Length: 138
Picture 1 (cartoon, helix red, strand yellow):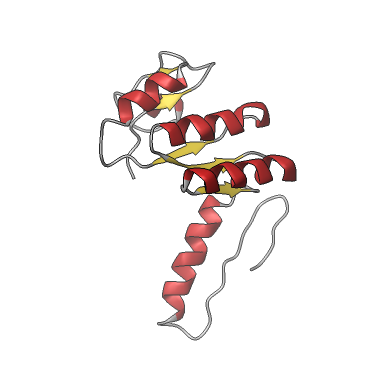
Picture 2 (cartoon, rainbow, N blue to C red):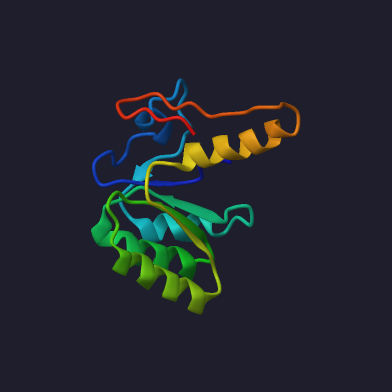
């Protein structure tokens, strides 16, 4: 994966690498206009996914706008309502495009699960151990 654009209302003008505490800047400025970023990156055939970590009030419009530019979305919004998920599902079905709604910050967990599946072909037992304030074992 490669970061090709970034939108934020607070860190406008900063380099996305700096905003994400990366060691080196990515030379991609953070801007506040989603339409401008989507229009710019949609010119590249390699870009096909928009990751949206935004508040609930704008998620439906953001997904709709990304699909207008031919991009699918991965959405993480804490406490998203079933009505919003249903509306997104209906919109995606009409647009014949997918959208992944991640109800918890589990994108990393999904990647770990895929790694576990791959490892299970080579080991007898494989498990993912999560550590944090609410640690659980899967």
